Image (cartoon, rainbow, N blue to C red; front, side):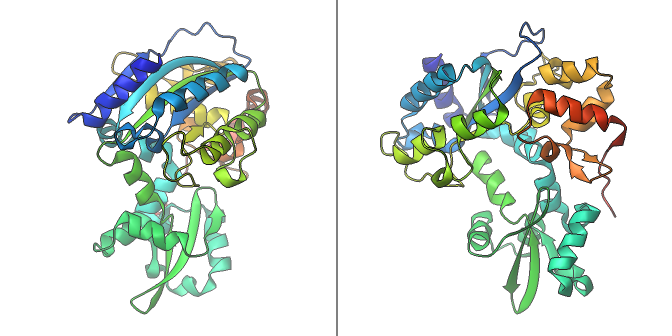
Length: 344
């Protein structure tokens, strides 16, 4: 498999057309037991930049060995080019709430996030016209690049106002402005810039979610990742892997943080015109259907809808929970699931 993946990465780097190479297809009819985690693992563009000296063969050797050691089974595998990600807007869909707020600003915030915003920044109650999403701000100030906005964000205090909602306060041309999710335009650009590609793997495991995310993958910031985790290894051995910078922004690997987000991820990355993949074709989707969830409810969950009683988006609500814990929780609040409506 390793050689096929590397060949596909070469092809995706040099392609002039949207390309996604299937190494192992996604099986619609699953033969795996339902009582286990069904997760999406991604190697990000910083690990596939073989044209810049990244030793992808060594990285894959380590990954495959560690997956085996942690009793994680691999299913479908795809290599996806930057043009495919861009055409299908997959990154925008994966980070749906971040993206909506970055593009539409204040109107996309939940009531809870708005209350927190005006509690922390009361001066903006009378200056809502100085509140911008990241994309909105770049449209207004066209001379600024997504990377420039990212650098600004990294050098200012970032406040979390709610799920998928982050704010910085910056002075621009003598005016105090509040910018929401200002890092997100650069996040999208990193995945969709020329010569970028990613590797996605469908994974099955019965290990606890926290063990997989903390012990196997490691914390978001590689400097805080547990010794022995994959991100800690990338940081401590970056020269061996041909990596020039391992940090929060370039941490190399992603694993679904919870079963609902994983269900959505399968749709984003493995759906093809031939498969017509739906949430019901995932293990967790099948479990939800067995517990009375409709196809429409499954689709709503994949859109990261809010739970009405708490206004917490379902991805965050089920983060780090095991599949059975998530199933129990969602079954209890099944009638409380609502689509977040944009306030115009």
